[in-house]
Image 1 (cartoon, one colour):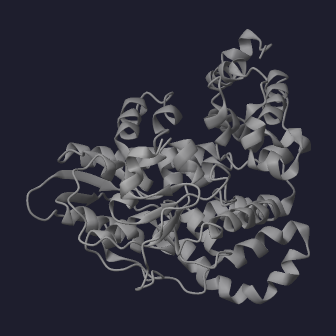
Image 2: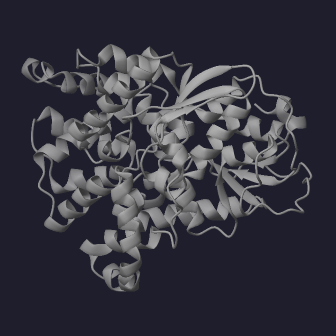
Length: 456
């Protein structure tokens, strides 16, 4: 794509980076076929190619964002399916992140929209605030129908709908400390406790720590770390995102200096995509650039780490039929596709892949709150494809996807690590039937231990 930026504009490193990305786009349109919003809405401006044109026009002309570009950028899920499809290597993620920061700086949203976004940024990244908000949500649930009738208040209605009926107790395992591995020491890792997941399902990290320590891995929960910054990053609140990144880089750097780390384990793939990008996000900060790059290099999704680990034979091979939902941040953001399915299959599960697995479930951080109607359409499409597999349970590696899919699915939705922990001697996850049978290897996209070598 030809660009026309002035030398003065290119002196801004953010503009210069976006210009490089824009020049890689060749207008081929391959991205439109895999973009969830284009597939759903059929509007060229709701495709990556259309948004790229809008961003180019805005940045080249050095003008503030207007209502049209905000509408179409807000509809982007940042699922990054376009990056998987793109034959030219266009880094749409960094381009749309720059556009969102520009929108945040130059566009004044309607009052209720500003208040909603400010509330989300104030509450979600902070576990204690989020826990308190969920308790208060019970008082608001009777008003969901009323809120949904007012367009500007729909996000509040969506928020209340997603709020769980009960909240698990905070886990002591999430407090700073060191969990020693059993037997001979086979590694030392840190684990991200994070924000929303630690409130909605603290058992995910508890299970991860339990499994790793049984395998002989020492797990460190370092003091000072918290939200990865993804939630505010995708709302264009760049300074808040960078502050979160710096805080975590400091916490993990101390852990590295105090005993070394083989990896920084992430159990929410949305967080993993952002943490693996810390090196880019902080590249212009001389005090953090090198440290951030080091942290990004150590960041591993739990399935990515276990896939490279010398695992023993499972204690049990359940034979349960599992539909594996690959979160967008996992398959498109981190390019982790085979490892979770292979781990599940080797642990004795029969893994089925839903059709249209590349399409987003509609969660996407705060998307299912801020764009609830599009999100619901994507969720229903995803659930229909999942239920068509005939699986008994859904496995995925992202808390946002778990919450989103579980809001409409008729089967349990659990984190992949809980199924793996069960196979390797841990407790049976909630929702798994005692009498589950090994399914015949039939249908489309079935993974089992016997068929791994035949899977591309």
